Length: 286
Image (cartoon, rainbow, N blue to C red; front, side, top):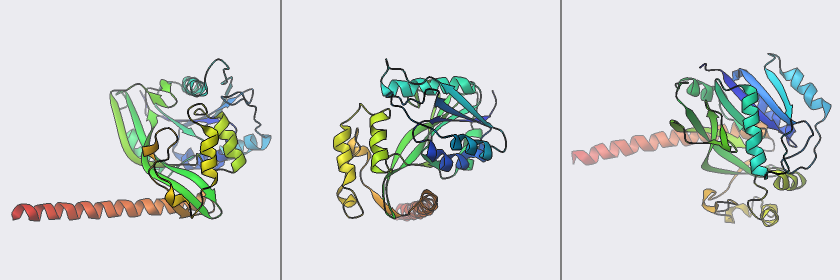
């Protein structure tokens, strides 16, 4: 098998976020596929539109001719939203071919350092069935110049060389299940009220929790109230322990600020581990 890097996106009502996400991975991908429902239906059967300007932008950015459009019927009224999600991911994987490394990214996910991630997975043995996990930094809300973030080390499956999906991006356990510290900013919840309301009714988790009640909670959060929210993940409360507030009025600035914050955390962890090691050695000498 080869080490070809294949990136697949599921394009739907939030297609516009691709304009931020795609440039972060374009240079280091060998092959990019965009899966778009040919009837412009969400997994809940709701209609959406994609303007011609989006496809014109794709042509402009694709200077290396590596982007492929895959249109098919991804909505199946006999399936739940999460089943439609999983089905589309498997259809996309087959479209891209089963060789190389498959990386499926949502349009609202932004890598902090995709090139280093690619260097890492290319160092792995392509002949051993592997799934590689990364960590989300979830954008929960944007209000003025403030962005509320969740940095809880929440893991998600990102790359595999055996692209047969069982639930969303999750596969069966493979021979190697690798958990890395690579970070991806996920804009999941940080949208306008109208946009988030539409998403909550149409995404793959639409039937997993009380959407209306949770949406009302989200609406009251700001730079003053966020500190009082704890253990608030809609399906697994302890997963999201708290929120952080970062001043950034657009995604580009936010990505740079998060990079700085992560660099400081890494430095502090190294200093702490060095101090811990030195302290342990001194204790042993006593």
